[in-house]
Length: 306
Image (cartoon, rainbow, N blue to C red; front, side, top):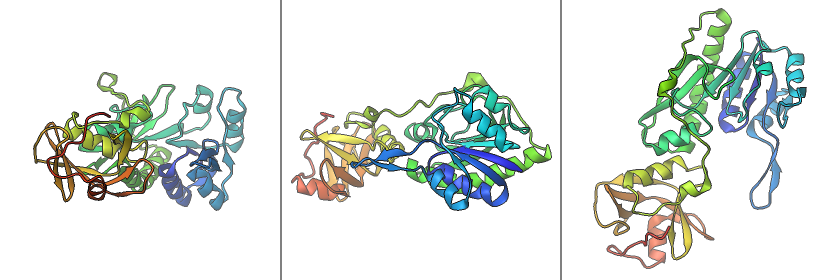
């Protein structure tokens, strides 16, 4: 079976690796190279790096409006298009090309969390179970018929850990779905649109919090935004990024430091155990190290000026 694969981030690369071991991946479509870091070094996406190692042709169109990318796909003559975190809506002329259609592996249990940031939004919301849904693509955003669902318990995973988990389990899952489509045994069922929720792109400002937010909400933000923009609070006019956090049952006034070992700060509904932090303009360190460096002690308050 000839497959065109469309995807860009590390999650997609993990799944591409699994597909290429079983099927003839005849082309990989991904986003253009992007400037990365303070020096803005032009960097290829993970799927491009892997595809080039595997000897698979790579295509990086800016869009599909002029019809050139669609013609490239026709020339590749795929039986199926597999899409994982590609970041573009495919026009109908592309959806109609492969004989078996286009399959999207979406990072939620649809119809919940349709859109660009399903993993982050589910973790922020404190969902105990999320997962992957394989759907037959149509012209809508994540509205196609469901083929199969892979549930994944969220536990205390942050977004980075969840993406890795999805990459590990998503490849075998998608391979099985494709085998069923090829054999004609896949069963499709429409989504219930009335149950749909949306997962819009993450805005940088969403990561800024203070300790008047509930403890549960703060921990959700820290875990859900672990990759970007990384949740942060303000202290003495500087942002303190929080890399990891957990809930505690200790209570106090919002912003009150309840313990330094580890750093535990009160918030409505409990308190937040703060793991590693990255103070603005400084290195990564434990929350306790940061607090000691600021000469903070139990009973002091972290001002809610975020």
